[in-house]
Length: 308
Ligand SMILES: Cc1ncc(COP(=O)(O)O)c(C=O)c1O
Image (cartoon, rainbow, N blue to C red; front, side):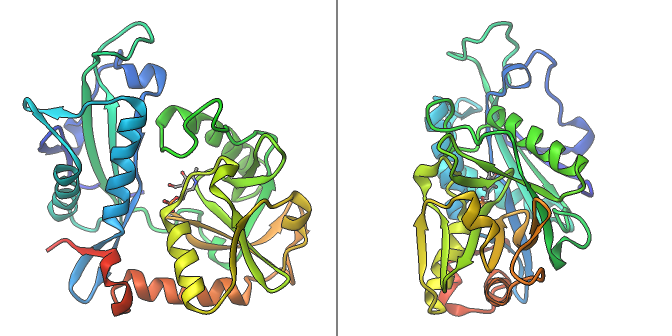
């Protein structure tokens, strides 16, 4: 990740070095924040944010789930203001390909009670490049994690809540330490849920399958885009339960996420997936997706928000 010059913090652009919080902030101690990850692509009409409306909506929905009131300078800060602030952050910085807005409880507190604790809103743009590391685009290696994807009884699985990501970091550490790129987590019923920061798709018996939202997954915006694009390309896509056996024996497996984009998987738990090479279906969808995000496909123009 490369730093940028300015971070948007509570209504103002401040220098990267000056965007600070107190060590006793509630979010630092208890994980009380919601965040987003959003991609920015270069297009012939300048930088464009991909699916900014959907990301802003998910961020504000996360605040609703957590009970956060976002107030800046005495005024309620809602969807429209957040949408504009994200664009302003991209505009203020050079070479941004990833934006991370985060709304969190910044008030200094000892004790869990979140009621009445002040929120802060920070928006950071970075240059991320390839999220899964060099070479992963030629086929990522996965492990099935012993850590379970937190389900809807223990956490708001469908919202991007900071504290809930502790499990993802444990699973990710395990994957990296075992020489893999990513970990796939199962849910409390043993069905495939998702990876630490990506949704998962398989191609098996001529159909594209992905875990349904009731499997304790994050309702990924890339997942939603890929379901639509694949159907428009003529594939059958089903949202369903997927077992570990189906994962190992799929013809193709790929991950989708804002950071990871579309990443083919070639090995899971030392088993080759398909012929051990990135699959044809995944690569065809990826090619179409990259044209869409860079503004080359007019049918999907509504998914692109130009910064200038
Ligand atoms: C746990 C988890 N699953 C899936 C995804 C993919 O979601 P999206 O495509 O909206 O980035 C993410 C990334 O935000 C994630 O953190």
